[in-house]
Length: 95
Image (cartoon, rainbow, N blue to C red):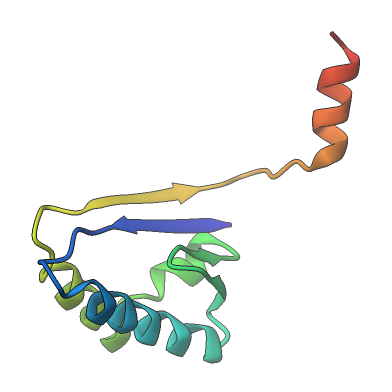
């Protein structure tokens, strides 16, 4: 799985517009079946799917990022493993 975290600071009074623009870009990617879910952070099944962002929607995302009031925090996390509650229970039990 690949997660893309983009943390932006909007100019005063423009937060709603920035959020709407980001959601518009990412919803389009989900409809195409590339992105699995959106919550202002987006997840992809694998690095290959993420790298398909070399496209017009990704260009729009970059344009939105450039409108931020401050330099954005951008993290691309490549997650090789996910563990659920069973793991937490096992860790807790081992104490």
